[in-house]
Length: 341
Ligand SMILES: [Zn+2]
Ligand SMILES: [Zn+2]
Image 1 (cartoon, rainbow, N blue to C red):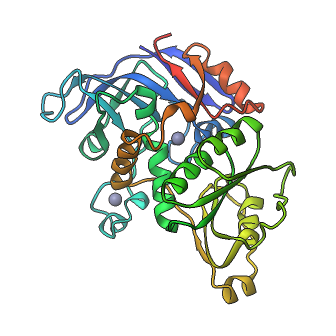
Image 2: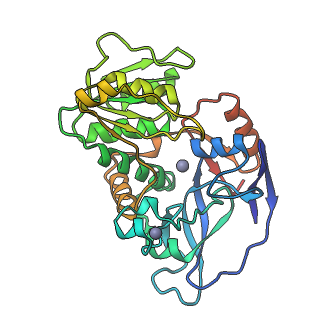
Image 3: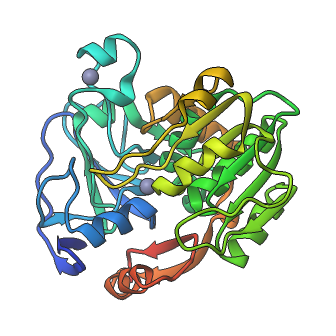
């Protein structure tokens, strides 16, 4: 079969690779939709990922598809089943798993290889994070389950009440999903981000204000926004955005530093502001089996749909060119990769 393999920094190639035989507990899925993601771009630029090891490795982690083959011991799934899988599953027996903090599992194994004609889902993910896709749900909608599950987790961690003023920093796919979920929770939402197309999408998703941020490495506060928000959801993964979140939140407010920053970076926190304004600072990582299920049901309820997030299409053969384009500033929100072409 054909698959996109990351060979190193800025080096993605589409190659013919063997179809490995299934091991006990595994399921082979024919990919019907694979979506690009900001994390993939980060990995492409760095040429490695802490959890994936060193290249070469198959690339892409957001997918949905049809079961093509199951290992002989599998009873719950059969060829033809419509499925979506997470890119990891918690082990269930380490200390963080026992504390119900499954996103921090000591033994998370990451699954990659969505940009391919098929993917082998490991036994642990088949058992815990492979879900049935309703017949009425589109393939690109279903493929949003994994990133949405991360955002569901982040919104849950910071708690949103109806009427809350919420500021989302960043208008990429994660920021836009945060807008949709905060609106769904009854919040009044503002966004600061980059790209007129993305900001227009934020408004379509229900944001009351969407401000263009023009400063290259800072966030310039629009008038009346300092100290104004009950919740600030940071979705840029930049240290200046983490620090800006502290300026926008009100006394007693909550921040989620959701975007992961490069390793070795740190931010400064004003201790007086932190203590006397009693801020709550959270940082959410990844998803849990519960948020994966919640994400799929939010997609089924059409709170989040692919038409708001997928604004480009690409063949598998053209994927290396697409990543070169993304690395040099293409601002598509998400691109649907047609693995059959
Ligand atoms: Zn992703
Ligand atoms: Zn665990």
